[in-house]
Length: 198
Length: 175
View 1 (cartoon, rainbow over the protein chains, first blue to last red):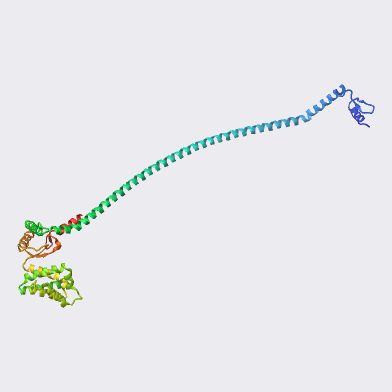
View 2 (view 1 turned 30 degrees about the horizontal axis):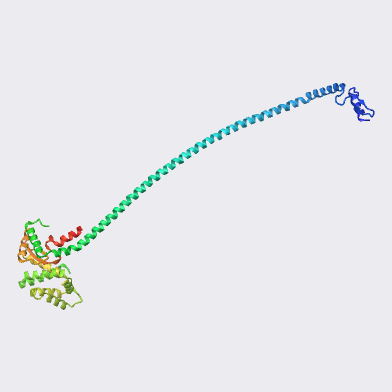
């Protein structure tokens, strides 16, 4: 049996369908594009039956799947929203941290400036003190050197003068001077009373 | 030499001089000789040198004093040197002078001058010192060129110094 005959037998058992068959037994259509009207009604009814069957038996599963999908998508949207909130929170924290970093940086800069200024002031103060001390020490050294020079000069003068005194006095003391000294002593001692001498 | 030995020699010299009747002269001559001994290194060395025989040291002393001191003084000094006590001669003489002055109830005044004093000056100086100290004095005058000029008198613990040497020393100290 040919395929067309088989199909016709099957279809005939279901509905009364008539096919155009050519001489060789093959099914032929009246129009190359549009089926026959009768076939449209039959096809439409069959399609309707199929759709109803699908709606009745597969509809709940599809609805449930769609709802699950909707819920999943909603969950994903909620997660994304939470992630966004978290991200915004983190962004806020980061911005805050950045602000803190800027503040810390400013504080560090200010502190460094203050320390540098303090070090500079301290350095200037110590430098001034050292300069003053150097001046003072130099003045003291100069004064000491001048004093030592003066002392040495006085010592030299004294030594030379002392060396010359004996010679000068001895040469100056002639007999008259010796007698004057003796007479002066006698008169002075003679003029003093007992107990006045030492 | 102990003080007792020095006193012993001084008493012996004192008794000899007093017995000889030349105490004042001997005392004065011994005092001058003792001062010369103190001021002369050569004399001190000649009298105290242990390597020189005692007889030779006595001969040196006798030669030095011959014609310049009484025989009693020469003999007493020679005796002290001969006994090996030449080193203690000044102390013995000072004790003798002190003893002689005490016998006459006088205090000893040691006077040093650069030039010799005349008799008049010695007399007036003695009176001046007695007036100043209130004591009767036995004045012993020593010519000591080291005083340079003026007089320094020592009576017991009292020193009256008006010498040029002292003034020079003070001036040197100030310089």
